Structure formats: C-alpha cells, structure tokens
Length: 361
Length: 218
Ligand SMILES: Nc1ncnc2c1ncn2[C@@H]1O[C@H](COP(=O)(O)OP(=O)(O)O)[C@@H](O)[C@H]1O
Ligand SMILES: [Mg+2]
Image 1 (cartoon, protein in one colour):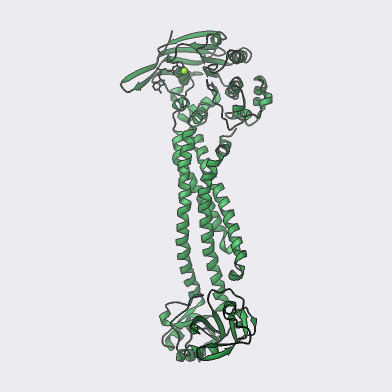
Image 2 (cartoon, each protein chain N blue to C red):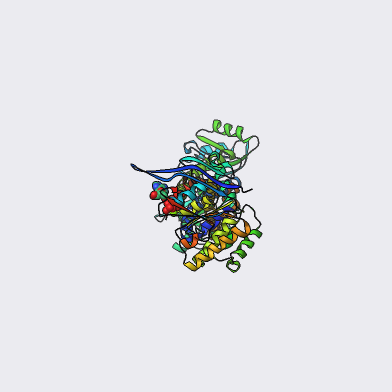
C-alpha cells in the first residue's frame, strides 16, 4: 500500500481536530474571497457605469483634484461663465451639463440632481421632476403634486423606485441650474478629435477647469479600488495566515501523538523522505480541502449577495467578482502555505530515532 | 551449502546515561544460517531487544561489524537501510504495532513492494483470518493481531524474521498458535527466524536456544 493513502486516512482519524483546523483555513479563505470579490466586482461595476455614463471627456472645477466619482457630492462648481465657454467650443459635441448639489426643502436636506440624460434613469412617470420613493413615503407627494425647492415651485412628474437612503430629486438641468446660481458640477462631452488633445484645449482655454478622459477616469477608479482591495485583502489574509499557522501546531501534535506509529513505519522500511512527504501531504490536504470548501462557500455567499442586492448592483456578474486568478491564487496559495506549515512537523517526524520511537508508550 | 543470513562480529552497543555507561551489547558474535529457527532467552535488560534492533538495522552498532547476506550494513545510507529493511527483514513486535486506521488487509499490504495483493490474500489464508479481511486491528483479539503482524512481516518474502517477545502479551493457547505458525513457516517455507523471549514454552519450539546475559551470548 502507498504510504500517501495513509495521509488521507490520518485526516479522517481525528475528524473533529481536522475539521477545526480546516475551519481556520475556511474562514480565512471566505473572508479573503468575499472581500476581494466585492472589491474587484465594484471596480468593474464602476468602470462599466462610467463608460456608459460619460462621454469622451468630463470637465470639472480644477480644485476638484480628480474626475467625479459615482455617488460623491462635489462642492466645487463650474461657474456659469465656464459652462457657456465650454458649450461654445467647436471640438465638443453631445455636451451634457450635470448639476448635483444639496438643497433644503422645508428644513430637510435634499440631494438635487440636474440632468439631461433621463434615459439612464429608471422611474415611473415622465421626465421633468422625479423624486425618490422615500420622499413619497415621508411627505405624501405623488405625481402632480407641487414641491417647493428654494423659491421655485415645481410639479412632480415621476417617481423613482431606486432605494436611496437620502432624499433625491432629479430634474431637468434647466430647472436645476437656477437653484444652484447657474453653477454646474461637471460637463461631459464627446470630442471631434483625440480626447487627449481636446482635454488640453479645454483646460487651456477655460479658466479654472480640469478635464479628464475615460482612461483618466478608469485609472482613477483602478488606483482607488486597488488600494481598497489591497488593504481589505491584506486584513483578510491575516485571518487566513492565522488559520495556516494553526496547522503547524496541529501537525506537531499529530506527529508527536503518532511517534510510535512513525517508529513502526520506519521499522517496516519506510524511508525518512517517505515519512516527511506523508506529513507534508497531510498538511497540504488540510489547506487544499479547507481552501476549496472556503471558496465554494464564499462564492455561494456572493451569489446570495448578488441576488439580494440585485436592484442596487444591476448586471454585475459573478465572474468579474471572483475571477479565475483569485480562485487559483487562493487555493494554490493556501495549499502551498499549508505545506510550508507542515515542514517543521514533517522534518521532526522524519528525523525520529526508530528505536526510541518504538519504545515510546 | 548453508548460506549465512546474519552475522554479528564482535558487536558492541553502548548507551551513556549521565555518568553511567551501559553495554547493552558487549561483544556479540552470532551467525544465523539460512533456514534456521533460533530463540534468545535471558533476563530483562540483558540486551535481547538491542540485539534485534541492531540485527534489523534499526540501530547501528557502537563497535563491530554486522553482515547481512554478506553485506556490511554500516556502509549503507539511511535511505538504503530503510529499503533493505523493507525488502529483507520482517519485524514482529511484542505489542503488535498494527495501524488502527487501516484494515487487516491494508496493514498486511502496507510495506508491500508489489501492488498486487495475491500474496496478501495467500498470507491471510495462511494465518486463517480470511474472514477478518476488512476488520480494523482493534476489532481483533491479541492472538489474531499478532498473526496479522506476522503476515505483514512476510509480505515481501524477507530473508529474515525478527520477533521481539512475540508471545509476551498472549495467553498460553494463543502463544502456542503463534509459535506453531512460526515453526510451520520455518519448516515448510524455509523462513529464517530469530526471536527474543522470556517464555521457555515458546523457546522450546525453536531449533536452537541462546542464553543472553549482560549483553553477551553465553
Ligand atoms: N536508549 C537507551 N538508552 C539507555 N539505555 C538503554 C537504551 N536502550 C536500552 N538500554 C539499556 O540497555 C540494556 C539492554 O536493554 P534491552 O535490549 O531492552 O534488554 P532486553 O530486551 O533483554 O530486556 C538495558 O540495561 C537497558 O536499560
Ligand atoms: Mg526487550
């Protein structure tokens, strides 16, 4: 019989001990895959969103320091003058002005979104003034009722079903601009020539503006998300590492407990190297099985998450969250680390003196 | 015409316990011919186990030469020693030392160099445990376990069987079964056997009885 079949049998021998050891690896792997999965999923989701939302370039107030990120409210605006200068540039077409700002309605803070791209939004009713459902619930508005923002009274034309934790009013940009002293958050546009040269043109000819192309935007998202994913991944890796380190401990206990058995194996002719390999295999199996189970559970959790939050996350797909490199890396990495964790116990076992091991009670 | 299987030439094994020096073997000369059946008797601590360990290349002599099938065993690397043990020597222990996570069949096959289990089936019949094929050792009686241990020792057709107190944990009836089995293997299969024992009854089954005292054969 092959000594390596013994490694499998040994795992089954102390089931509770083996399962508890694997649990350390499983929990670490779940944390790592779920968190990194959310990170990579969010990155690709945000890229998709910006690609579909923005034109070739996006122009903001130069004090912004970067292209606007989804769901952040800017407080540096483009002046009315800057906006009209941009609108008059011949290199630009499909110009759309967006204006997102906070306003007060009857003492309650509201997020006002001035837009022209109604086709991107989902709601019941017609474009014009669209409010989120939480406003309906809170204040009893309905389509056709009047809402007063600043000094302006407007008629509500639609209700959006998006779950938002803040009060949100979407309106035509022409209605929004006067409420914000004709300042805009950003302008997106397509360019008639290379976006990179047009970008420079805009920055040079319109004072106080910064322009970003799609690739700037993608880089920005990438660098921010990479940092987040890295930090979160590093924290989750610590959990995994703790799980793996416990393998050193358990394998040492196993080997000590089996001192006599190892003596017998040597007496009937197994070589030091075979003993060493069988212990390494046992440790590696704990890592491999543990990480595989962990990946499966993590994928199931992510699937459940995607189903529960399908409204918010839209058409994000699982493969972009848990790419092949992540699965291979986590299972491969855990297995290799576990084998390394088995090295000292395995070396200890292989060096046992046969006669002393046989005398061991 | 008799070939020598094992040859001790002035073999010493010295243990140091603090200031005290113990000569577990003190100049042993011993020749085992092929097909011989020998027992070693002697009080506890006289060096019987040590002699078997050295003879089975589980331990190296402090001094002297051990020839196995004419080969000087001290020249072998640790790896070669292990391979040699697996192929040429079968060990039978007082406390059986079967692996409880394996079945009877798997225990017998454990050291096998041949993945076919015909030989194991044959041995299982020989020890009359065909029906216990898939049992675990802890489901067997002491006598049955010792028979499995003998089958395991025989799986690779070794030149030599070394048995350290093979009946030490058995009652008289089971001890006789084991000794009859060893005698049968020696007489009908020509297996060379050396046992250490306290038990005169067991020793009486063998062809030659050696007396050990203070690390020397009398
Ligand atoms: N590892 C060891 N360290 C020190 N002394 C030992 C060791 N092994 C055996 N001895 C000593 O060697 C002597 C012979 O022991 P052993 O071969 O076990 O005798 P037996 O099997 O005849 O009872 C004893 O005095 C024992 O205490
Ligand atoms: Mg002894």
